[in-house]
Length: 96
Image (cartoon, rainbow, N blue to C red; front, side, top):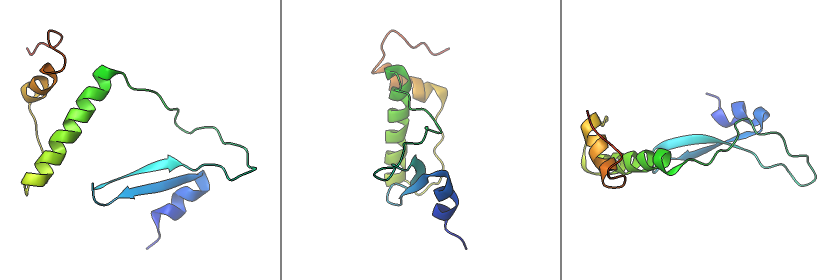
């Protein structure tokens, strides 16, 4: 079986694997000293507070779920998500 790192290396990407947290992602390799920097495959963009907040809260909820449950899938209702956000964004979220 071939290593996935071998497949992404020609694209100047490296595989970052976090086995403890259970996820992996690709990161663009830094150029060696004296090499020209390559253009980014995916531009970096700063996420706004209203976009990053649900991501952080859902990640926390998933970590809590993994720690206390033997289940493999977490399912949240829209109402549960809205309630999590309501603590941080009062008067801005209405659940229909």
